[in-house]
Length: 241
Image 1 (cartoon, helix red, strand yellow):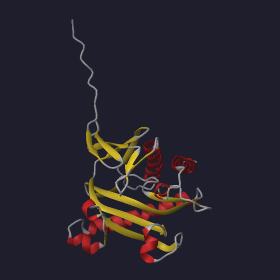
Image 2 (tube, rainbow, N blue to C red):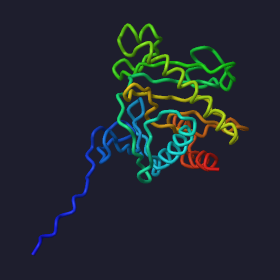
Image 3 (cartoon, rainbow, N blue to C red):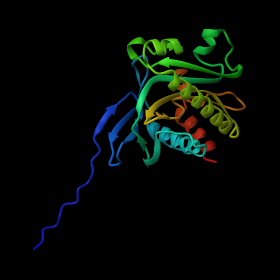
């Protein structure tokens, strides 16, 4: 009698755990499973946790990544896997955080003495070095090249791509009566290409109601405004239309 062969099932293994996401191995070559956590470790060390936080960020990011795909923009996103996870391409991440600002908010107002809510004449692109021990310092191209963080060619491509993504998403949100105040992007290298990584969600973007200027993003946590879940769900409702 022939023995029945055992069906081998793939079990993802944890590769990396960050403050708000986990990355697991995948059956797909050169891909990872990116899982959104319900908890987030804030800069002051405290932990914010909300049931469904990971699911909402995953759903919002999925919609926005798929929208960017229509414009032939390269992102690490491939497809959703479940309520809190998506399949992504494995990137060699560049340790730079790119912030694009359309409206004055946050520490930008303090640094430049500008009133919160001021519409900027043109988007402002800022670069920050992703270094925890140095507390993510603001840098320019000279710092980046001198410290061998990235190359002139990569920075040129990163800023062009970030500018294009911002223009596309800003228009997308405006049509849904939402203000795309600012956003934080992270990029990586895949072969010869610069590719958008991380997530696009209310954790990485400031999004205000188009009429009241009420924050609907993670800023509500920092301002102790409450109703975080309801605000995220309102964003999800509007961008799902």
